[in-house]
Length: 237
Ligand SMILES: C[S@@+](CC[C@H](N)C(=O)[O-])C[C@H]1O[C@@H](n2cnc3c(N)ncnc32)[C@H](O)[C@@H]1O
Image (cartoon, rainbow, N blue to C red; front, side):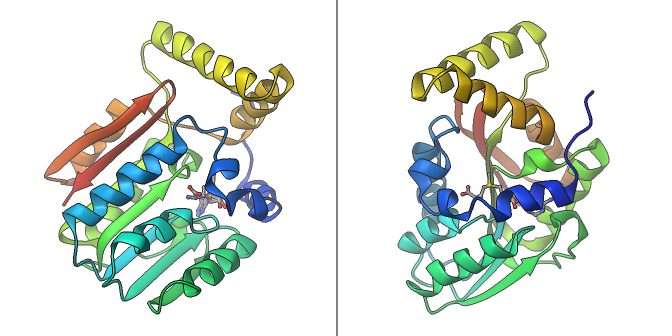
C-alpha cells in the first residue's frame, strides 16, 4: 500500500477548501448522488426524531448536513461539530448561527481523540469522513463511541465512499465511478480525484459497516442508498 496522508496533511487540504464545501452541489460534485443522500438523511432523521434537541456532526466540514437537518428540526438546542479544520468549523458555526439560536460547540480535533460522552445525542451524522479512519481497531472504537454517545433510540446516519470485498464488483463499480467523473469534467479530473482518494482515503465496504453496527450494539440498521462506490445507511441505538 502506498503511504497514506497524515492527519496534518488531511487537515491542511481541507483548511484550503472551505469555499467549495460551503455549497453542497459544488463541494460534493465528486460524490455520486450527494444532494439525494443529504435529502434522504435529513428527512429520515427528522422523521425519526421530530423533537430532537441534541445533534452531533462528525467531520462537519462547512456544516451542510447540520444546516439541512435544522431546516426540518425546529427544537434543536445543542449542536456539536467535530472537524480537523478550524476554517471549516468557523464557517460551519457562522452559517448555523445565521439560521438557528441553538448553542453550537466546535471541537477542532481528530475524531479519534475526542471523548463523546454517553447518552447525549438524538442524532449523529458522519458524511464523507469515516473513510479517513485507518484500521479495524479505529473503526470499532469510533462505532462504539457513537453508540455510547447516542441517547436510547438515537440514530447514527452515514454517507460515504465505500469499497467492495469481491474484486470483480469493486473493479466494475470503480470503473463506473471513473466514467461519472470523466463525464462530469474530463479524464484529467477523474485522475485527480483518483489520485487524492488513493493518497488520502481508506474506505470500507457497506457490508463491513453494517456488521460493525450490529457488533457494537445497534438494534436496527437500514441501507438508505447505494450507487457505484457511494452508500448511505442508518443505525438505531
Ligand atoms: C469531504 S469533507 C465532508 C464535509 C461534510 N461532512 C459534508 O458532507 O459537506 C470531510 C471533512 O472531514 C474532516 N476530517 C477528516 N478526517 C477527520 C478526522 N480524523 N477527524 C475529524 N474530522 C476529519 C475534514 O477536515 C473535512 O472537513
